Every structure is written in C-alpha cells, then in structure tokens.
Image (cartoon, rainbow, N blue to C red; front, top):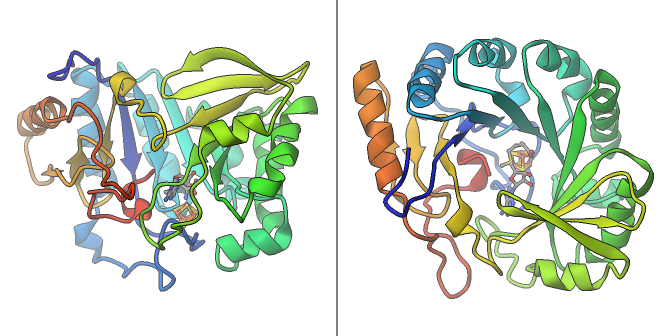
Length: 311
Ligand code: SAM
Ligand code: SF4
C-alpha cells in the first residue's frame, strides 16, 4: 500500500490491551486505566480478522504491544494465529519484560521472532520510581529468560533528563560484552508534564565518545561502541522527524486504526465485513499525514495516553 506521499506501508503495530502491570510515569496516569467492558475491547477473532485483511493489503510485519501485551489472556494464541497468516513474515513484541520468564518459550514456539524489552534505568530505586512500584529484578529475569530462549533482545530506554541521563554510558555499556541492542528513545510528552525531562539524542551521542555510526534501520539511527557485540539505536521523534521513512499504521485495543501516532485521526474498524475492513485500512493509509503534529512545546495532538496507543 502506497500512501499519498509515496511511502510503502508494510508494518502494523497492534495494541492488544490498554491494561498494564506497571504504571510508568510518562505513559499512563497514576490511577491506571479504567478497565473497559469486555465488549469494548477487540476480541482475538477481531484482531486476527484485521491482521488478515491488512496482510492481504501488503502488511508484512506485526508488532504486538499495549498496555502490556503479556497481560492479555490469549496473547500466545493471537501470536500463533498471526504466524499462520500468509504474507506476515515478521512478528515482534514490545513488553516490559515482567512476565517473560513465564512466556518467553511460548512466544518463541508461536512464531514471535523479536522481543523489545523496556528498561529505563539500572537502579532498583529509580526503576521503582519511574514505573510506580515495579521491581527491577523481575525485568532482569525477563531479559535473561528471553536470551536463554534464543531471542535477540532489544532494550528500549526512554531518555529523561534528570532521571537517567547520568546512566547513559552504563546502559550503552551493556552492548559491549552482550549480544543485545539498546535503543534510546526521545521522551514524547503525553501524560505528566516532564517539561524539563526532554533530552535530545544528539546530547546523548555527545556523551558517548567512542561510538561509531552504522547504517539506519527504519526510523532508528544505528551506532556501536568500538568492538562491542551489540548495537545502539536512537529514535528521535522530537528532534529529528523520521516521518519521511514512516512505514506503519497502528491498531488500538478498542478497535481504531491510527494512521499516525501523534494525530487525532482514528478510524473505527469493528463490526465490519472483511471487505469493509480492507477499505477502511486503505482510507487510513491514504489519510496518513506527511509528518506528525506536535505543538511548539512538543505536545502531541493525539487524544490518547501512550498505553492506549502502543508506543
Ligand atoms: N508495556 C510495553 C512496554 O513498556 O514495553 C509495551 C507498551 S509501551 C506503551 C511501548 C513503548 O512506548 C515502551 O518502550 C515505552 O517506554 C514507550 N513509551 C511510553 N510512553 C512514552 C513516552 N511518553 N515517550 C516515549 N516513549 C514512550
Ligand atoms: Fe505499562 Fe509499558 Fe506504559 Fe510502562 S510503558 S506503563 S510498562 S504500557
């Protein structure tokens, strides 16, 4: 599917739930989310029907996200059935890692190829603070179990000035002797006003003197430390627009296609026939904006918090 600006849309991020077992300060409100009625959330059948329709239109890669995708009861079955859909040739998941010791092997067996695990700090106290009560030992066990299961692990780290800027070198250092990648992501203001929290990728790059550029990988710019086993990526939605190379659409857990993370345009896709779903997906692709809309203070135009979009 080519959008109105000639971009080939081949990637769909699927949020399977708004719910989460953590409460990260930059992602969701302290009180969490009001649990929706069962009927207001897409069922497994509906999610599979949308992925089937999307694959017939040229979507090749699916990433499951949330909320926390591993709290969705039937996530393994959803992954397995997605793996069986002709045309889908890559399935990934983004998780906070807490439940990976329980699910890593099942995910592998059901066709998931890659796991991104979110970790913003190496300090137990700071981890508990930023996630409002999480235990870093749980996520470290999750990372270990993903590696043991044979996944190539990517760590997602949101850059937050005054919170983890003093740890960047240690976090990047994890790639030196371990075959894991780390991706630093610029903070996008969605919930709490981390007005002083933004720090650009370039500032972080300047803190890593022995870093060497490699190729770009979609929306990420890739580097590595000298002689390191893993790689370091930078995703800079605020300081550098990567919209020209955007190849994705999003499906929310309550059944809307979002053409752009930061746009308020949403297209309701539930209770439709397969042909209707396909034409709504095409509409969504054709309404992808040329670039994302952030106001002068970098505040998103989207009306959702990140846990209700999927990141
Ligand atoms: N619960 C899973 C997790 O944390 O990996 C998946 C959902 S989470 C919304 C997906 C990604 O979005 C995570 O890597 C998270 O750090 C990132 N994220 C959430 N809020 C963000 C924000 N305001 N700015 C930048 N990244 C954010
Ligand atoms: Fe949950 Fe992920 Fe949001 Fe943290 S970033 S609250 S783990 S959905």
